[in-house]
Image 1 (cartoon, rainbow, N blue to C red):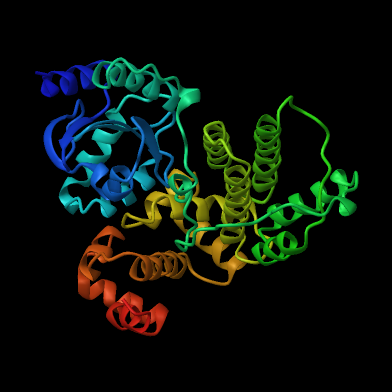
Image 2: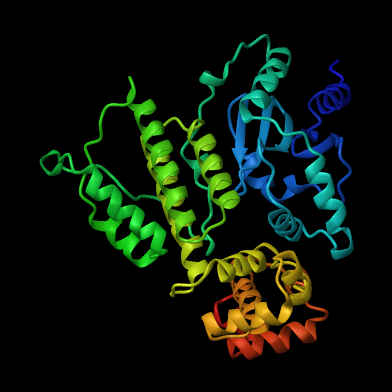
Length: 397
């Protein structure tokens, strides 16, 4: 007889990562080194339980990883973990998706931050050892793990929940030219300007690029080209106003994920998502105009605290300005007050959640820091022209 409770507890204590054991979908054991009010795995249960093979993994839209061992009717799920955990704002959004009660969100964030940071390769190596024990001495290595295209569909959701299925594609050999410098400059200008319309247009008709040989295999070539693109795009986004920490963290996450992909199409799709996300972030920051670093820092601050009641006095202090000075400068440069901008940003986030989630209106209002559902509805009506319920109904929810 195999003691799965012992395996679960030992693996969790050794890795400091949550571990669960299921039989035919029913949970037998769970070991959570950090105390969390809700299990974030439940958000992705369907995707995780669809994984095939004796050892597999799933990457969430936030670049958190779950490793899986399948042995007959037994499924062991370890995770989430990441080499770099998401920021607090992202973890609050994850808590919202997991239906964590508002008064327990702080405990959820604390628990997630207590999970040990592990490269996914390390997690999978340990699960390969567990697999050797459970599946008749099978010896797997990371290079043996099959990564299906369907498993990668959710490697990065865009802000509107749209998944991209095809982007760059192959180009006719006759079109190939050594024009990489001019193309690179044009593309990075688009990222720096935050021009998503131009990016989509460029991708629809982009000339083929005959890059130099920078690897011995096609797969390594593709990964290296994505790394180069990530490096250039992150710098362009920083010049466009994105904070250095955000840009470098995003670049690192995409590079780490590319190392785990094993097909031409997957890497191309990942590269598209990366370029689009950098461009969208800059577009949102610049609001279609040239603004100062003060305004960019203010907008970054508001976006990082969108799930909280944003206090203008505290924000001004955190940015090392007085509230009157910050308010006047922001209005002079953007033509709107700080309060209006904050509430508009919250309304836009509410629209996205109303369209692409099944969370209740009350839950969405609470997540966005409104004091009551009535307050949320008043603000939403003011900036969206309808109540949250009417907006959702109009979009078929």
